[in-house]
Image (cartoon, rainbow over all chains, first blue to last red; front, side, top):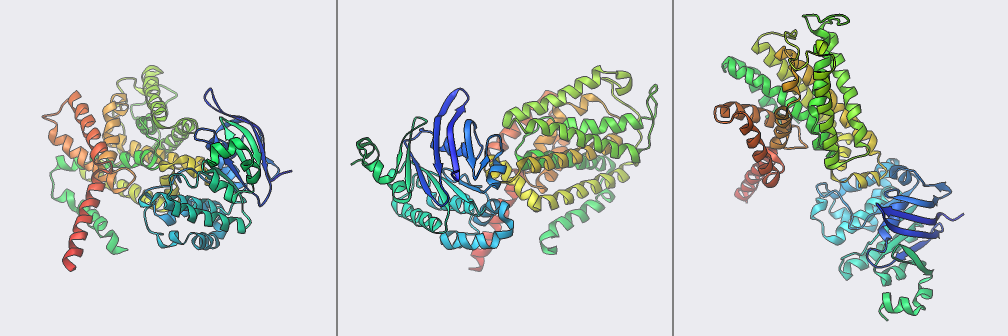
Length: 233
Length: 322
């Protein structure tokens, strides 16, 4: 059985169906990308995995059925989540924001702080700065760091490059490579297909709530529709 | 530590000797202010810290007050009424408020924001109607329960009792808010979903805040009722009483301990001195205006203003040193 297995996932916001029979799997140590335009259902997919939406179908993580589990129990199984735009606590400083993420791995708090500050040295310099005063890129890094503080076995990154300058995106890219080298299993949900293709071993194309294509970045680049629509080639 | 707490120590010292220098009428006002401060701190524990804005706080106060008043009422209603001493009825009243807090907590697991506020308002109204309609021969109905026993008699002893209670509640809540629990409660107010998505059981922490808030409200409620020596649904469940509590916390500064205390005293005195000019419904009108003004221009209340002034003096001092 795969590390994370999603089968026939359907999610709703009231009567509106956001995901229609989505199925994919992730192996341990793998980095996969879910790419698609705005409103395709990428965030809903990640929210469903951690139990923030009402969904039908089947999601299993390391053999555990996630149906009906509250978010805190799913996170306890070892899933870290860095939501879109960070969703930080703006009136708390950087260190306190990281501490919220550390709640589940209190016994490894020192070790995880060191790991996060090693990957994201900027956070180390700004430990006392209020999160609300950070720039967009810094917030994204803090969100990533907070997710890593829970010592996750699977990391979900929602739009890690959204609205960021190229120089900041390259810093996020370095961090993702660093996480991969540490053996992290990662799902990146992104609109930026080129960025995701550079880091993910497999890509899934999500459009209007349906996975329309899947394969290695090279395979997807081989498709004319993908090339034209997402790579602009 | 002493340096940090010096303003608190000065305030406590001043408050302790105050009855020696002020007329009795002011002492009585100070008693009312201390109880309003307790209610405001209690409301703030639930609403200011977790973000679940309660419009039904008098429900918790009322439950405690009615249990203690009903069991200690000296006139002795017809059997099966039993007259119990205050040292038993007061803890029973607080326990009833804790039970009420658990009831209050149930809707918070399903509804948030204005929906929770409306449900909490419904709690207050239901209790209000029940007390009037169900067995008024026991509850006193619309007239309430008169001639209740007092914990202590006289303005000055009551002043020290209220002051002691207020500081005990403030110190207790101060320790809670400075602990990890207080820290998590503040994060729940900011973004409950993210807290839950960090693996923290918001359920557990919210339940704790609700119970603590209810216990504090109950404690204030029973002592206040026995201070007044009467209890009626008209004041206990009135919109004015509810607004007094909320506005005291909002004016003072939500999510703080000092704020609701200051708000309680400020509101009691300002309302007393404005009484000849603001009566009846005009009071509610003034409340609404004050609340709108503060929420728009000074969401952190007087506490925020005090912090700004302090920051200004600090900056000035640093500039002077440079």
